[in-house]
Image 1 (cartoon, one colour):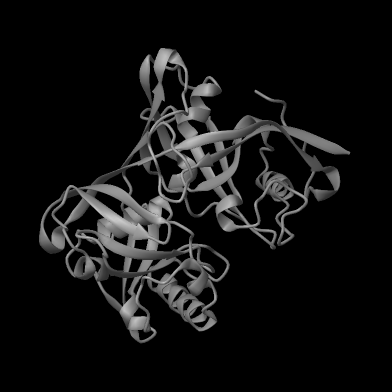
Image 2 (cartoon, one colour):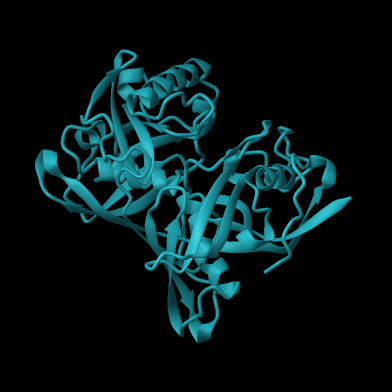
Length: 367
């Protein structure tokens, strides 16, 4: 027997995933996760029996529902679904998939479209962050056509501005989880920063790398990947996250000086492979760290007084705006903003076999 569940496949930023209304999924978490695993075909490395794209950036899910929070229109729960393993991780968030939440909310009737542009106030359930998603809606209709380009995505689309608030310490409770801008972990200096995404930042030079390597070069560097994972796990404990061997957070990035006039170069790991471009939340963390005295990022960045910070990555670069408060060692982060794009790929039903369900409560009817 096959269960059919409404969903939309969308590209959000440099990621792709399935977008669901929460009311269309089981209330029970184990049953919900079983549905997501089956929908993506998670347990096979090719994801041949599901809608996943056999990479971490194409095996993602957004679950959207009306919010009960007074400052939000909708709640967004992000899930990272495993590739070649039965895992559903809701600990991290994803700023790229977030780019599709605003249009999805409008087109599902959660927010009324205004003429010109519409702001959708989103509460990220994973981290507690509040984000304003500004969507282009000429004539009260979402448009995906436009002239905005995003490095790592072919063509151009309508801009979607993402304005993040309440993003410091979302997982650990502190912007600097260890209380220090630098720590010594596994023989190298690192900066542990929790801003939109908990991250471990390492200078590429300290690992014997340039920081300008391609994704293919880094993915083939087994010694480096093993060392990064050892550092990540040790830093995770130091950050108060416990045993992170089965979690994708904290993420880790290796940094180098910008190849341009300003900004910083970053290679972001997911964590077992290098991202083809850069996670949006990870770019916010790297950019914010350039504003904090004493961090690895601050030491390597050029133009740290600029209003926007250019984070270079294997697919190009991403511009991040950072709003700070305080000075010097007391610097805090008030907000961050960036522009992404999104596009629906298909809308319909995803079919989930009864045999794939771990538990069997009835799937709710579409709201």
